[in-house]
View (cartoon, helix red, strand yellow):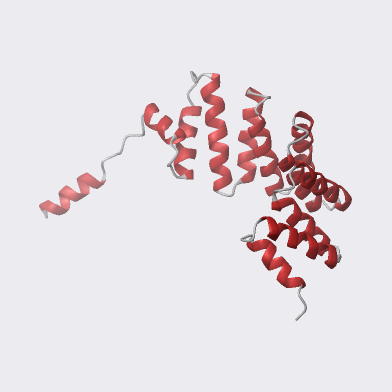
Length: 204
């Protein structure tokens, strides 16, 4: 009876909320779980006295955690707030473009990639990523042009060759698709997606 009463007393005890420093640690810790990042960052973002640099970092970190939790719309909101504080933060714009695509807001993703490419016109991955957004939006010729530019700028990266091959395959241009998959596999023999796609084109 005494033990049961003691357990009831202990069970009713309230756990104090994390201190600001504990919340800050959860927000920025490399090994924290996404939900811990969200909780920690949310607590410190509620602090009215937070300086702009820390607020920018916290918004950016929480946005990444939302993406890990498969909530791209929440991530978009935080990336947009991050860019309002630091419009030149290209990593936030790139991640927002990825989040827009995940949320199927393809035109907005393309607009962010347009801005990124204007600032860094020789960065192959931007063309590859924009090509994916164009493909998802049904802009076939624009997607092909972007994948082709990505292969020109970085001929040693297999991703754009694979993406161009997948689009050729979607269009029924199997011979061209096969050549792209072979090229991707020559660059990366362990590229499982390219190998699986190529197997679909092999005669049975």
